[in-house]
Structure formats: C-alpha cells, structure tokens
Image (cartoon, rainbow, N blue to C red; front, side, top):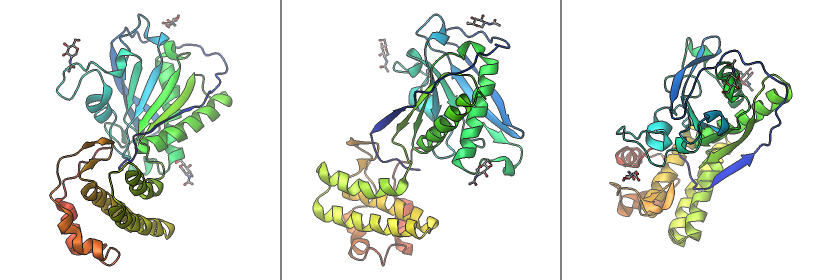
Length: 310
Ligand SMILES: *[C@@H]1O[C@H](CO)[C@@H](O)[C@H](O)[C@H]1NC(C)=O
Ligand SMILES: *[C@@H]1O[C@H](CO)[C@@H](O)[C@H](O)[C@H]1NC(C)=O
Ligand SMILES: *[C@@H]1O[C@H](CO)[C@@H](O)[C@H](O)[C@H]1NC(C)=O
C-alpha cells in the first residue's frame, strides 16, 4: 500500500520486563556478524529472519535491537529494507555507509508468514488479521530469545514503514500483554512508525489539503482532488472495498499530475515525469464522478509510470 507522509511517529511503550530466564544455549555473535534462518512460529508457519549484529560495540548485546517490518502487506524486509534501505550492503552489494548496523543490531523479518522467504505449509495457515500477525511476532520473539539468550536484556524496538506501521502497533500491544502476563521474558521498549499506512482513508483525504498548505497545489486543483477523496470516503463508508481501492489509486494519479510529479515520500523531491498531463485529465476532471471508473481512465492508469514502493 502507498504511504503518504514523511512524518515518523515514535511511540515509546515503556514496557516493563518481568521474571528471570535461564539461557538455553548461546549462539556466538561477534560485532558485524550475521545469522539467518527460520523460526516455526506456529505449526505450519515458518518465519524467515536475517539478523545483523552491530559493528559499534565489542559485545553486540550491549546495543539495542531494531526489528524492521516492511509494509505491503507482503513485501519482504530481508529484500527491500535490507538491500534498498539500511542493511550493511546496498542493492549493488556495496557497503552502505549509513547502515543502521553501525548503531544497533538489526533484524529484518519477512512478515507476515507468506511474505518474502517466510512461508506456510497450507494457505489456511496464513494470518488473517493484525492480531494474528502480532501473535506470530510474539512467538518469533520467544524463539529468538531461546536461540540468542544473550539478548534477553537488550532493549528491542520495532521500526516499520507503510503497512508495517499497522503490524508494529499490534505487535507492541501483544508483546506488552505477553510480557505483563509473564509469557515471555524480554526487554521490548517501543515501536516506531514511518509513513505508516494505518488509516488509508485519512491519508487519502489529507493529501490535497496538505499540499495546498505548502503551496504545491492551487485551490482549483486542490478542490478537484478533494472531490475524489470525498468519493473514496463514501466508498469506504459503504464498505465497497474494491472500488475504494481503485479510488485511492485514482486520487494518487491526480496528485502526481496536478502536483507536478511530487514524490509521495518526500515533497521536496520529484519523481520521473509521468506519461500523463493535465490535458489527458480534462474529461476526467470535468465530470469526476461520472468518469471515475471509465475504461479510458483504466487504460490511462495502466500507462502511468508512478513508482511503487512499499
Ligand atoms: C563511504 O565512506 C567512505 C569513507 O569515508 C567514502 O570514501 C565513500 O565515498 C563513502 N561512500 C558513499 C557511497 O558515500
Ligand atoms: C484473528 O486471527 C486470530 C489468529 O488467527 C484468530 O484466532 C481470531 O479469531 C481472528 N479474529 C478475527 C476478529 O477474525
Ligand atoms: C551467554 O552469553 C552471555 C553474554 O554474552 C553470557 O553472560 C552468558 O554467560 C552466556 N551463557 C551461556 C550459557 O553460555
């Protein structure tokens, strides 16, 4: 799913850790090392992780752990976040100077099961709601501490982007419950949500007013886009999810064109020019609701080169 905002919200959960734990075995991890594998978070559900220990301390366990959750849902953290984001190597396998591993231990988690290298034995084993996803993450943490007991006291933060923001928030809640119930021993401290896609309709309806305020849209274009966004809200209110999703896409296309290819992730930047221009949208704009789902527009949209990032 698309994201809308450059704002990062950090929610410190201030979770309290409880009882003592007996380490089972220690997997030796030196600074700047890595480990990966599967944790069976439920029968039939196998979660892939890739752990990088920090280069910044002799004993990595003295630095925080950051768990990265990609969005989608369905985008793989071990691919996107790792190679295109802040892993130790970039997509050309060149060392990344500003990698997060220079400051903390980082775990890229392919989440929910079914995403990236994570898999399920049967489709029925896929998580079907955010609580289910969060419980799988709690289960991952239990298994993680069994395998790496040296990290039991290490502060853990879950950082996330886009749909990952939704999953991180639910993860924090379930982790808090599990720690308070004494079901898991750990030091989970908080979650951070970056350009979180936690309420798509609120994001969709706030784009135009925001871009008007910063001078990227004029009033006329703002009004056109807002009319579409209001239609999207009606569709959501009527639980017409498929059409609402199309409506959201259309709103993005309008913003790209009227906003002169504004980058959704950083309004100080532009994306590459689109195939469309305002003339293409004339009919569309003059009769927005009437032509909303027109065949012509669908074809237009298919040609639109808007970058898709998760
Ligand atoms: C990374 O840092 C090194 C050493 O400071 C520097 O030579 C190199 O140009 C940097 N690479 C990038 C991509 O910024
Ligand atoms: C959410 O998923 C969990 C775990 O699969 C399941 O037990 C629960 O019934 C689901 N809740 C809803 C509201 O569907
Ligand atoms: C595991 O590692 C920690 C810290 O590195 C150490 O304090 C502890 O004694 C080790 N436990 C075992 C069972 O080796």
